[in-house]
Image (cartoon, rainbow, N blue to C red; front, side, top):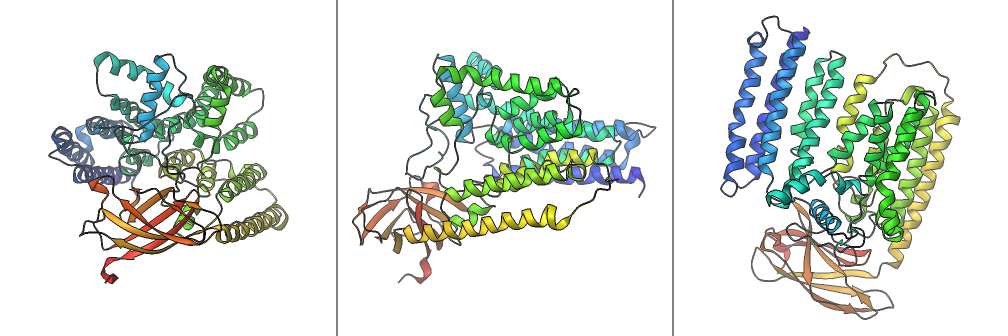
Length: 527
C-alpha cells in the first residue's frame, strides 16, 4: 500500500473516532444542564471536518506533500480540540480521589499532615469499605497531591471551584500522547498518528481525565523513565513511584530493563536520581509521622468492597467462586515473582514486553478499576516503535526454563485457591432467604430476610444493590445484629433517587465484613 494512502486512511480513522467520541460525550452529558460544554463539543465537529479535508487534499497544507509536516498539523488539531473540549467538560471532581487530593492540599497549606487528617467526599460518591464505613484517609504517596500545587494556588487566588485541578489531568493526557507521537515520528512511522486515538478512545471513554481519573500522570512519568537513561529518566521513575502504588507493579521490570540493557556506569545517574527523588518527595512525610505514612501508603484494597469489570475479583464477588481476601494478595505476589523471573530469564527476547506484566498482575487484584488495565495500553504502543524484529537466537529449555516454573505456579495457585474457597464457604455465616421490593417501580426500599448460619451473633455491615447497568449501589439500612442460627428482616433503602431500582431484575448483596451473600431478584416471579 502506498505510504501516502496509509496516512490518508489513518486520518479518516482518527476523524471517525473523534466524531464518535464527541457524539458520545454530548449523548452522555445533560446538554441543557451543561450548555457551554455541549456547545464547545458541537463546534468541535469542524475539527473533524478539517482533518477529513486534509486527508483528501493534503497539498492544501503542503504542496510538496511532506507527510511528517502534515501529520504534525493533524495531531495539533486533534490534541488541541481534545484539550479545549475536556476543560469545558470539567464540572465536578468526578472521583473521591480528586476531592481528597484537594482536601489534602488544604490540610498541607493549613500546616497539617495530610496523612493524619480525616476525609469525606462532599460532592462525589464515596469508596465504601466492607465494614460499612467509607474510605476516610489519604492512601496515595505524596506526589499525588504535590503535582497539583501550582493549579491549586491559582484556584485559591482566583476563587475558582476546586474541581478545576482536573485541568492538570487533561494537560498530562495531552503531554503523554504527544510524547508517544514524537517517538513514532522519529521512526517515520505513519502509525504514529494513531497514538492520538488514545486521547479519544481510551481516556475520553474509559478513563476520562476530566472526570477525575489521574492515572495519565504516572503513565507520563513512567514513559519518560522508560525512554531516557539519564538523570531525567531516574527522576521520572521516582516521581511515578511517588504518585500511585499502581506504578510499583512496573518498577521491577523497568529496573531490570535498565540494568540488563545498559552498563551500570551508563545508568549510574539514573539509579542515583531515582533514589534521591524517592527520598526527597517522601522523607518529609515519613519524618512528620512515619506510622501514619507507612500505614496509609503500604496497604491493600481488601478493606474496600470489591469492584471491577475484569479480573479474578469478578469471579469472586459475582459468587461464581468465592475466595478469602488474603488469596488475592497471595496470588498477586506469586504471579509477580513468576513474571519477574520470566522477564529476567528471557530478557533478550522479551525486553520490550515490559508493560504487559503490570496488566497481568492487575488481573489478580481485589479491586480492578478500569485504569488498572488501560493505563498500560498507550505505553505498549511505544514499545512497538522500539522493538527489534530480528530477535536474537537463544537456546531455551522449554521444560526446565518454562514448563517447571509454570507448573509450580499453577499448582500453587490452584491448591491454595481451593483451600481459600473451601475456607470461605465453610466459615461464611450469611445466607439471604428472600428479598421483597416495597411499593412500585422504581423501587426505593426492600425487605431482606437474612439468616445467620453461624454460632455467633452476626453484624450486617453493608447492603449492595446491583442493576444490569450499575454494579455499585450501596444502600442505607437499619442496623441489624442477627442472633446465632436465626434469621432477621433487614430494611434497606436507596440514599438517592438516582440509585433506586428501575428494573424488574436486580441483585442484592449483604455483607458482614468480607463475608457476603448474593440473591438475584426477578420481580415478575414475585407473587
